[in-house]
Image (cartoon, rainbow, N blue to C red; front, side, top):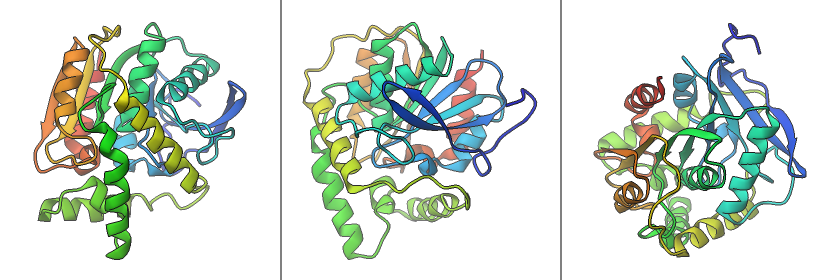
Length: 282
């Protein structure tokens, strides 16, 4: 990609890179200049699950790389059921792409993978953004499987998209944000990623459960800057996880958005992108 050619989420090709015995699907946005920002999506998501307003907004002045998980969407290999194994994959992919320094942004489970990646290879990651995520042994994380299944079942019975109930508050603001978010996810009309299978949900829910079952770490080895973003009404990853993260990550700052659920970055995409770009700017 030319340094002066800007690629957006709607027209970026899906590429593949071999790493750790699999081929990982990825897309690049923005201009290929400066330290790349690697973005990792949430549980049960493929590359099309990225909100265009977020990746395009971040790519206004950054080289953004969205990487798919092993066995998900267009990525080959057996689905991972541990956060640590996903992190090992991501470190391998980044190195296979030829980078020795990146920033990383993770949504929900992606934030857990980002943390584990930073622990595994602290020299590889400069800055972290964690949205709607939690640390090892975080409060309430072992309940995510029950909550996800319960809310998804309710969504099916009421003919709603599960993302509406899982990610957004039921206030008028939350409902409006949910409608707009679902519409944005349909903006890419060609060369879409392969659908997520039920096996992906099972494996990733198990991975988050194991992450939540582990004993909390006293202090992270990662010492780079960290931006933590959370919604005050997040039912999947309780807001107490934001404070738990600050206790483990000594160089972190927290922004909590009001009237926001697990999809805090989607609901507040303009404010989130502005805060993230400020945080990432050298």
